[in-house]
Structures are given as structure tokens and as C-alpha cells.
Image 1: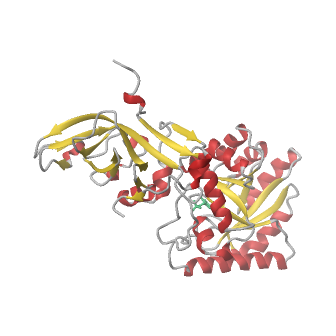
Image 2: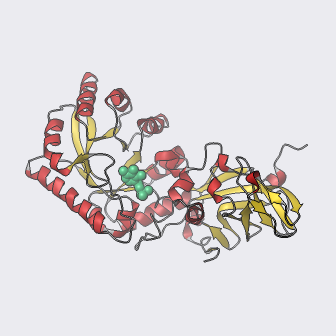
Image 3: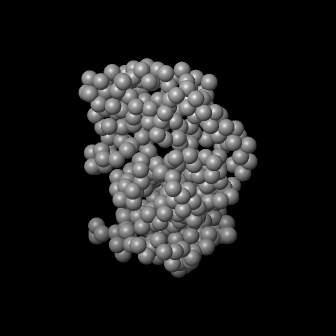
Length: 392
Ligand SMILES: *Cc1c(COP(=O)(O)O)cnc(C)c1O
């Protein structure tokens, strides 16, 4: 038995086009001209590989990298990143040493954290950058606008902490109706105004995610925090002025086996699919253990030999099945996300079929899926981008 995969096609892998990542950064910069960019590389850069993406984005001069947890910042430092890194989930007081050790900036919204971080920074004789986080309606993290001055006063008494930025986060900027987002924006502007009136100064004001960056220029302030647009998708289908970005990642697998199933016979666990006639069923080399959501059972699609086929039956951990025609052979390449011939399946399309958002589809591509990187500048030119969404 041969150990090399049929025709050299890997079991399941992601292809990441770093030139397109650069192209997307250029597109968002044209959309928010003159603004600093915080590239969100949390959650393994939305599944694209944090270290590799961070390296490319830093090479293009992004001013900040954004992560969710200190451990992600630590991994960036260990890979040699020396730039500004902001950790966007509020830390606990016990994490002070970690933030000092790796020179990570933090979102400030808790007095105990201020004290612990100030104390630790003092013993090491360094200064940590704080971004005061205002809760303007997301109700996840942050202090309310009414507490801004009192909190800034506490911060100003911490001689080893610097008031580097003021920030907030939008709850519904990806909706067509921007009413709530404009209310949040107004609360944020009011917090900034109150702080300035009280004599506090800070370098950066930031609020916009991809959705707000796309549709609301007044939300750009000094810096925009961008995730999904860098990876090539609009924040939602309701965005009106999405920058011209293209997907960076493709998810591919191969046909592992083929069989004929007679009319009335079932396929896969739970017998949730029954063949209506004599059908040809291909077994594909990926499953929910790779991040292919089980909710795509009997709903998803794939591309093989440039044509679209239905996924049938329950998605298993390591394999899933598709109903195919006579032309399909063992070892054929399967595209779950990406292009083949003149067809393409976007992560947003997969998300729609799975009842979720492109973010979850991308971030859910599991650690066992090998990432293969390419960096050909032609790929960003648009020549390859002629494919149409099937069914569109
Ligand atoms: C993840 C995140 C972002 C980026 O959101 P996108 O919609 O992917 O651009 C911005 N700000 C905060 C606080 C985040 O957690």
C-alpha cells in the first residue's frame, strides 16, 4: 500500500494566499485613507495562521496587531514581533506579569486591574499602555460613559500606566439600519469630549470594526480595527460600501472512495439521507474534526472537476459524503471553500448553509488542518477572480 496520497492531493488542507492578504489590506486602506490599522489576528488570524499573517501584515506596516488573549500576544512576541500589540479581552489582575513580560497593551475597565498592572510595571520599572474601554451598548466589556472621568482619574494616578487610547466596540454595525450604531458613536464621542474637557489626553481613539469601517466614515477616528475584511469578506450581506476584498483562504480535500448506493438505501450516521434512485456516492476526506460544520449535513456543497455537488448524509468527524456523477474519480480534488474552474464557494455561502457567519466557518478550521501558504503577487491582480458564485 502506498503512503503517498492519491495523485499528490492532500487529505484536507487550507491554502492561504498571502498576496491576497496584502491586496485586502491595500483595499481597506483606500477605504479608510490616512487611518492607522489594527490587524485583528486573534483566533489564529480567523483560521488563516496567526504568525504567518502577522508577519505579512507587519511587513506592510500595520501599526497594531489585535489579539483576544495575552497568550496570543506571547506567541507573536516569541515569533519575533516587536510592534504594538493590543489584547482586546479585559485581563484579570493576575495577568499583570504576563502583560509586562511581553509588553502587551491592555483594555482598561477595572480598577483592580489598574492597581495590579501599575504595581507590576513599577517593580519592573516600565510603563504599560492602557486603552480605556467604554461600553456604549455592546454590554460585553468596558465602563459606561458616565464613569469615564472617574476611571481616567484612577488611571492618571498610576505612574507606570500610560493613557494610550480610548476605545469602544459596536454591537450591530453590520446591520443595514445604523440607528443603534450611531447612538453608540454619539456616546463614545461624548466620553471623548468629557475626558478632553477634564484635561485628559490620549493618542488614539478607536471604535470601528470591519462593518463600521465599511459604512460609517465618522467611526474611523485615528485607527480602525479590522478582521474579516483583511481575510476577504464583508462583515455581513447588509453592508453597503464593502471595500473590494477577496477571500484569502481555500479549504480543499480529496475523494477518498466511491460506491453505488441503490434507491432506498441510506448514507452515513443516523441514516438521515436516503438515495432516491441508484446513486454514486463519493466519500470526501474531511469532517467536523477539520471544522466542516455538522450542520452542513444534507445541506452543504462542494466542487469537484469544476462542478458543484451536494453533500449528503450526516457529516462525520473525519469524512463526509457527496452525491456525484460518473465522471468523478478517487483522488479527485474537492473544494469546500474556494474556486475550481469558473465556480467558487465562499465561506459566507458555507456559513449561510450552516446557519452561521463566515467568521465561525473560518475560525473553526481546526488545528489539524495543514495550512499551505503561497505568495504570488499576480494572484492579487484580479485575473483569477473571475469565478462566479454557483447558483448566483
Ligand atoms: C474581533 C474584533 C474586531 C474585528 O472585527 P471584524 O468584524 O472582524 O472586523 C474589532 N474589535 C474588537 C473589539 C474585536 O473583538
